View (spheres, rainbow, N blue to C red):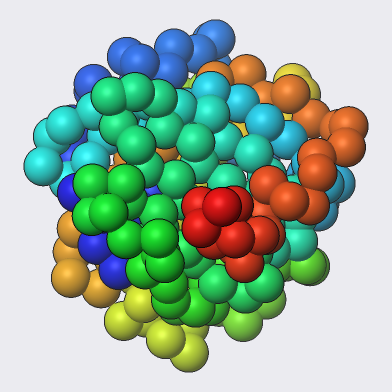
Amino acid sequence: MFTRRTFIAGASAASVLALMGAPAQAAKLSLNELSAYLNRLQTAQSDFTQINDDGTISTGRIYIKRPGRCRFDYNPPEKTLVMVGGGQVAIFDAKSNAIEPEQYPLSRTPLNIILEKNVDFARRDMVVGHREDGPKTVVVAQDPANPDYGKIELVFTGNPVQLRQWIITDGAGSRTTVILGELKTGGNLSSTLFNIPYEVGQRKG
């Protein structure tokens, strides 16, 4: 289910919007507003629904600690854990019976765009799409120096600004949609939630 650059697919736009739900029409949010929102988002957690490229659906809870840290705890019957920390993405898959996770650099996934220290959608020609979709503002971004790493499509609502979902398309064209519940922001999240060597040590026990 998880490939090297697609852990975070393919539902129709209508089905995704139906899962989200949203209020009436609102003005398109500017790139500066959205950048400022993400830069203020230091810690957050939420339930999530993930639609995988093969059409299967997973659920779980996400923890975000910017910059550079994120964690996806998947609900049973899945036994997968995805951790982002120390510049690496680690996928722990209990089905493989391997203690050591599959790892690859965060910089090689579009998720890095929203986890980097200073988000600035207006710089470096990173935004390749910015549109209004009813009450939502949609931003499509990629690393302009490495478009082969894929792209991320971010969906926001306003009043107040909130990230609602993202769709990651990897270099091979596989799509994964993550739909967020209500984000609980602020508060302290333990660094061990994002510490890959610590998690490996716990599993070696």
